[in-house]
Image 1 (cartoon, one colour):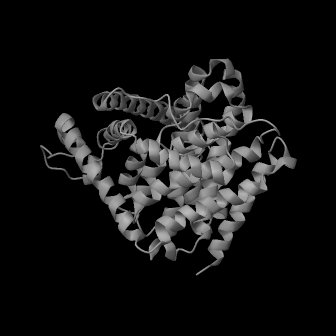
Image 2 (cartoon, rainbow, N blue to C red):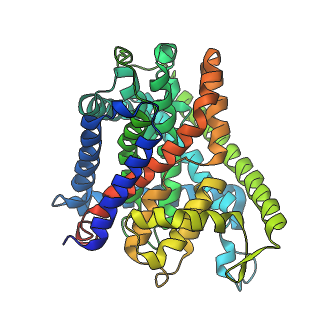
Image 3 (cartoon, rainbow, N blue to C red):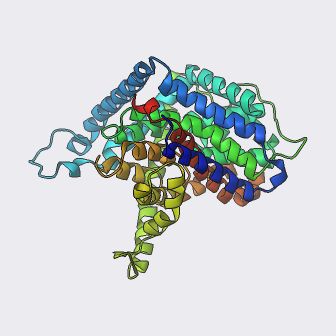
Length: 424
């Protein structure tokens, strides 16, 4: 049944797209066909996964696969780290919640999934899946072959691995296409982190694995849409053709596993370093402004951003009574990476927020749009296309905004659909 909250999400969708239009470099070039096509693709994918008869079987398979990967990873991590990774404790524990150690129980998943993704790429399984999405985006949204392939790759690979897939074509991309590539990189997540998010949310969100997977897939067309609105393609430019081949190759299955593990280790180290630094920096800032009080509590960066983002969270379909908490989660995501708010979201008791809000926030948080990713994006693209580093630097903050808002477009589309689709 269509309710006021569903209508509220439609308002949010219009507001976010309208905001990007106001900030556009060319307001006369609004891509009406792309807007309709992107929202249609998002809706179709969501309905196919959650609304088609028998979809619960597919979701159960996905959830089972995620649980299997998590169990296998725990065995590997416990072999190395023992009780720190959740193995048998050598002493009695009074606070069971304190046994959760992010470094030993979540980050190892990234290593395993990274190696598995590389192996599936070598076996051409992931290549064909990517090719299918690339053709879908090419036909439905009018993207050039290279851009479509990079957008599809972003669903499963990271924001740096995806440009490597079309490395031979990067120097041929226009400014608008480079911006599109960056924006979609901020609006999606890598396959190596999807499983980690799903594992964190599984105890509190039904079909968590399915929601996280769909969130990354459908945020790709949202990122394309907002990128085209903010930095429209000039007439006669763009559309660099690319065969569905890639510079990303492995010599053998063992080579794929080895390199995939090494790449995963770099991701783990980057995540760890960024979390340590940004949590420390935010703590320092909060210590400096903590002498000020607002509504009976000390002022923090996250609280200020929470107040700022509360109306935006409400516009996506969150009830106003829970918009403050949702806005706070968005603020934490922007400043401290998406891992921290996912852990916070997974730790909120059932009675404090509704299942609808938890579901919507899963989609809102599922993207690499945070300040720490800015450095990763600039560094990676500067290595791949050093001659265009100045262009990348000039576009990166706008791309961050586009990626952040793209996940909220996805959230609005999910919020506009009847809740029965997801709970029935």
